[in-house]
Image (cartoon, one colour):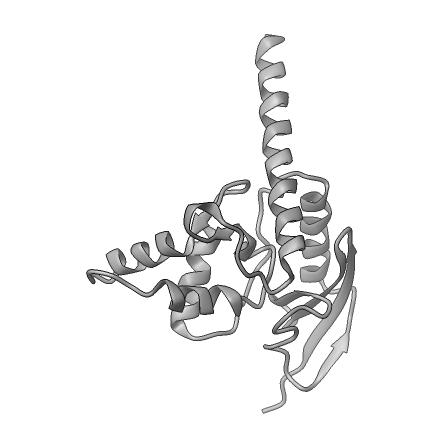
Length: 183
């Protein structure tokens, strides 16, 4: 069966980003040169910047890099094992500007599976192989006591992303408090 995948590029404050799509959904988003770059790309891909999913994703990225919560998620189709997809679904539930530890995710999975415990290392493997960085927010996962640990895009990028979200949350809180004060 012939399968075509499309790519597009986006230039962010942190460097180039490559986007991938099956034509309808976003299947990949990687910082150029990051660990596991293009891990889910098929061998046949074609550049097509005009796909609606790429326009939606570029809009999401524009809003995000301006320090705001985009408040929508482009249509996603992350390729991976059922376990990895489960972890990525949990990541999608981490609110903008907040973090969760690998251990907390492992506890959540153990609870959902009615098990006494689950491996934080297994969670780390799934987080590290996330094919749709930023939108599936693997950068919001931190080590025990909030320590910054591995990030496929690099620790400096992770630090930038977390600070960007922290500033965005503070600015939004200020805007809301000023709005309430004017009433």
